[in-house]
Image 1 (cartoon, helix red, strand yellow):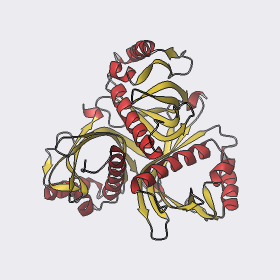
Image 2: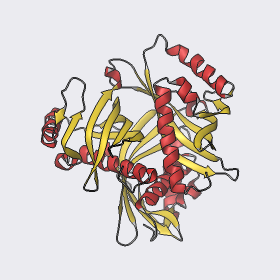
Image 3: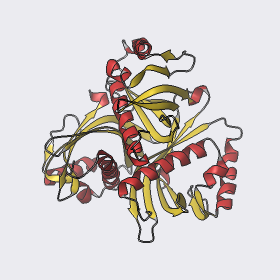
Length: 143
Length: 143
Length: 143
């Protein structure tokens, strides 16, 4: 938590941060999405896939992961909800929340929804900007 | 953004505004719902349907749209999530967020969910009250 | 609403309260979950089940309700959304919001979602801590 911030300010800032982050991801603005992580960030988004470490590796992992969608015109929407925030003594904030991924295909009104996940983030401030320093995504069906 | 408001205040006010707006819509309190729009508002909620302009036209469009449910005892629930807010120089606020519409039918525990949408609003203050000046709803399956 | 609190502070506190409350419920930390209710709380979560009154009775009802899952390795996730808050003259806050329950089973990527509910809570402060004094859950498919 930044030095002068109240919990209320933190809560609004974190909610807005995630809203912007998922819109970048779902519009496949991968460079801008990767820029919401610290340079040394650790990112583990799928069970069985080793974590990507550094922003460059996260970007590479995003491109690798999305190759599966090259022949599949799916629009993904990440829904994040229910943020529990625990400010730490070092100024970082642990953030634990629920995620559902919505998959929409052209002409199909009812989306496919899943997986259901719990996301464990550590957020930090860098020059006044909130960034994700680490993310671990636990998939409920793979627990 | 009103003159004296912080971003944190704005974020809470906008979230609360939408929570009240969807409860009015889903309970079919159409007059009260239409009153959450400015008198000159523009409202485009479905692909292929021309926008309704003015509060009176929005109200008429709501009644027209809901005729399909007269013989269908569905309870709709609008879920709005992930608000990205961009305060503008003219005091209005651009608001971009995700929506899912949940349809529940009597005796059926598992709802039908869809469509998945991205909503593009412009919000303004009128006599201290937040209102929607324009809404464009993009349906993901019709993109 | 506590005496010195703004609506913005209240809104963030209530969102965070519910985020923590559902994580306790979904991880089956029933003692900690029951502790988010007042000692004299009233809790009606299912149509046709009489309300549990007092924290002790709520805890007993939670254990009774979850017996059905002993042979069913389901991970439940409660999604709460769209909080409408009405501070009352006695310092309590009426809170009305939407809920969807997500059920995930091992190895099954797409969760079962439902029922869709509207939750009617009364929240109070006790020694500076926010607690639920009453909850009534209306299930949309049973309306």
